[in-house]
Image 1 (cartoon, one colour):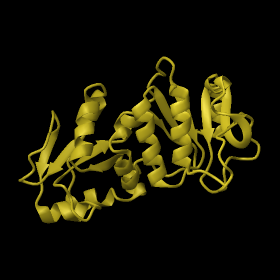
Image 2 (image 1 turned 45 degrees about the horizontal axis):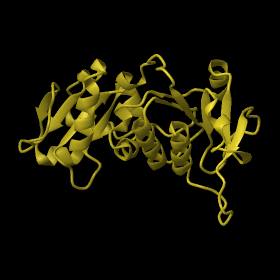
Image 3 (image 1 turned 135 degrees about the horizontal axis):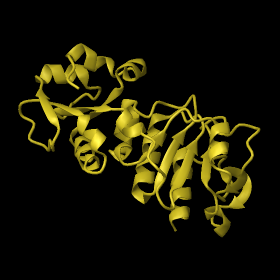
Image 4 (image 1 turned 180 degrees about the vertical axis):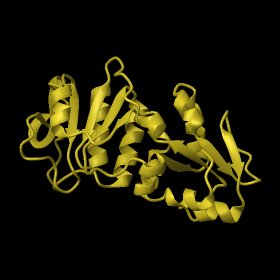
Length: 240
C-alpha cells in the first residue's frame, strides 16, 4: 500500500479515503494498537508504515517506508508529528465479522461529533464484546479526529456503516433506546435487548422509532448528557 506524498495527503479527505479504500492512523500509540490488533485480524497486516529515520518505535510485521521530517509534516494533521503513521485498509475493519457470544450492539443514529464517536469506540473496546453500527449521515469513522480520539480502539471494535433503522430492525427484533421518560437503565430488564439505539447529538432519535425506552435519571439541573457519556453509562450498566 505504498503511496506518494500527494496521494497520502489526499487521505485527509473523506472522498479520497473512499476512493483509495484506506485511512491514516498517526502516532506511535495508534501504530502499537494496530500491531496488536493484527495478531487476530490478519487483514490488518496489509497496512503500511511510514516513518522518519529516527523513529525507534514498534513496527511489527508491517512493511515500512522512510520519509523525511518535511514529508511527514506535509501528510500529518497534528502540529508536532511523532515520526510515524500507518496507512490502513478500510476493508480490514469493515469486514462483517460474525457476532460473538453475548455481543452488545450499539447503534448510533446520525452521530456527528468525531470526538464523541472516538470516545464511544474507546468505551466499547474497554468493555469488549461490543459492535458499533452507524446509520447513514453519520460522521466518517475513519476521520483523523475519530481515529485519534479512539486511542486505537477503532482496531478492536467491529464497525458497520450506512445501516438504516429499517435494516437494523430486520436484523434485531428487540430494540432499546434512551429517552428522558423511560425505565431507568439500572433496571434488570435493560440487559434483555439485541441492540441499543442512541440518537443524534442535537436532534435525538427519529420520531417513528419503535423501541423500548430507558433513561438515565439525573437531578434535572441541565437538559441533557453528552452522547459519549450516555453510551459510557449504558455500556457500564450492561457489563455490570
